[in-house]
Structures are given as C-alpha cells and as structure tokens.
Picture 1: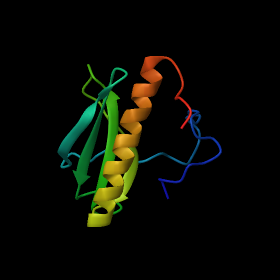
Picture 2: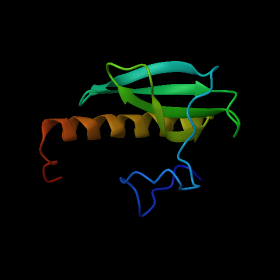
Picture 3: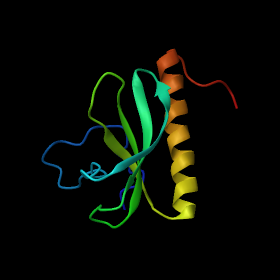
Picture 4: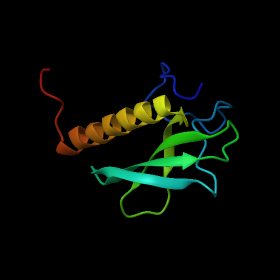
Length: 108
C-alpha cells in the first residue's frame, strides 16, 4: 500500500531503498483539476486509467514554475476514491499554505 504513513514519513528515502513511493502518472494520465497553489507549489488531481495497479486517481505536487509533478497519494478510481482524493488534495494544499506562512498551525 502506497498510501500508508510510515515511521520514516517526511524524510527522503535513500536511492538504494527498494520501496518506491507512489508511481508517477503515466503518459496517458489526464489532469482532472488543479486544486490550487500554495508555498510555491501546485497541487492537482490526475486520473490515470492505464496505471500498473489499475485505474487510479493521483494527487500530484510540483513546483509552480516547473513541468514535473510527483504523485503524493494514490486512490482507486471509484466514487469513494474520488471523495478521498479531494480530501487528501485539499489537506496537502492547506499544509503547504501553513508551511508557506512560516509558522505552525494555531490551536484547534
């Protein structure tokens, strides 16, 4: 499962680590929508019908000025998966906003 938060979350794995993160979108992946921009990054939702794991929705993240995006989460391409993907995408976007402001979140 690529969408499980592990104890090493937040640290880049060494290149020799055999456990890859979520795969990048395939060439035939289609951008469904741009969720927003924050902290110098853009967050989007991509539908990837030709993914090795079957049809999926990917939440992708990349620099605003670049062409390359990286998948940060993968959900099944189902109505439930679409709801989950929207929630995860908005959470990633909000996290980037908080980090971009330079201070931590307030008390909930």
